[in-house]
Image (cartoon, rainbow, N blue to C red; front, side):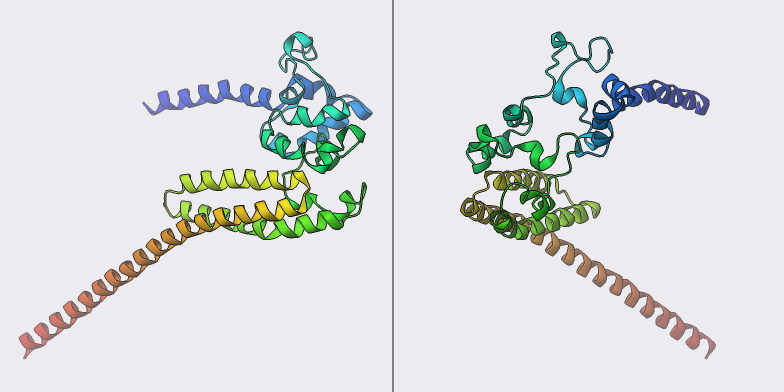
Length: 266
């Protein structure tokens, strides 16, 4: 029976491995990785990106057939290539809908036709990094304008960002301890997405106002975590009491037995 199981496992691995390799390296990656200069650079940049880490490859953004060299850039297979400068927000907004909605009415979005900053100016086109306040920095922001407004926005967001990271840590801790945290984790996920949308409008007052709303919702999540922590503390207390009672009972039994033995010997 064990031999049959072993053969089945081997068969599954052999069938699964080509699929994994294929998913990692599409024909787009295979072709461009061997190209010199600008044609090959996107592959190396993409490999270090959050897109690659999440399994998002070339065709997910640019379309085309990732399984066929001849049809990889075929419009009939949905290939749309690279967008024009002012079309980048709509291009990225196919997935990042909430961010697009926040960006368009903001200062950057309103200045798009005049060359205002769009997604790839701040995030890069292929080496897209995980969203975070590190992207708001003097070196990058001052390429286009003074850093003062961006710094105000970053300072307004820092407290919220710190609390979200701490909450994420708390939920992971409780999950490891066996508590059901799925609903809380889902709430934090949605709240994090809402938070990431806030600063794309680059409006200081709106950022402050909406950050306050996120703080309020974080307070609610924190209260739920506190309830679970109280339950955990009570479990530990009762567990300690039970252990102490067992220890006490053991000591009593030892004393009783010792007394009994002494009486027999006397």
